[in-house]
Image (cartoon, rainbow, N blue to C red; front, top):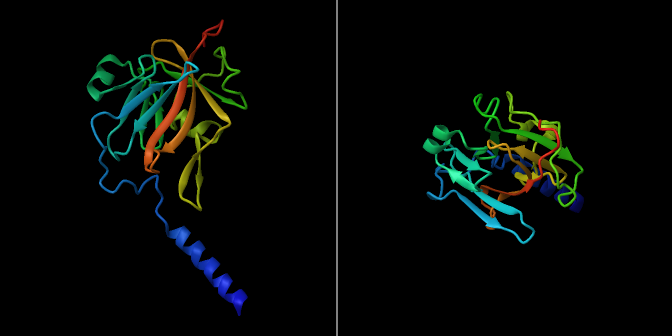
Length: 201
C-alpha cells in the first residue's frame, strides 16, 4: 500500500513538471523590458568584462557593440551598422549573414578550450548566421534546456570567438540566462579582446 502511495506521488510530480510553462516563451507575462538601460558592463580584474543584458521584452531586440562595450539603440544600430550581437530573449544573433546581410560579424565556436589558454584568435573556422543563428545551431547551441526545472543551462564547454564589425577579435563565454533573483531573459556573458591571428579569416 505504501509503495502505491509513493508511486502515485511520483507520477503526480512528473505530471505537474510536464505541465509547467516553458520559460523560453511564457515569461514575462507583460512582455515589457524593465527600463531604458538594458545593458550593464563591468570590468574584471583579469582584464575581461562581464555584460548583463536585459532581454525580457518579448518584442524588443537589444543591440550590443563589443568594441565599445555598450548598448546601441535601434536607430544608431541601423544607421551605423556598428552593432555586433543582438539579443531577443534567448536568441542571440550576429550582425552578418542571416542576422544582417550587410554585416561582417562572424564567429568561431570552440569546444574544450580553456578561457585562460586562449590568448590569440584562431585563423579559421569563422561563420555567419544562416537560417539559424550560430549561437543556437552550431555544436548544439549555447544552452541546454532542463525539462525537469524548465530552465536554460549554459554549456560550459563552449567558447566563442567573435570577429567584430570593426575587425577586432573577442573571446566570449555565456554565463547565465538568469539574474541573481532567478528572473529569466537576463543574459550574462564575459568577453575579452584577443590578439589577431596571423591570417585574417
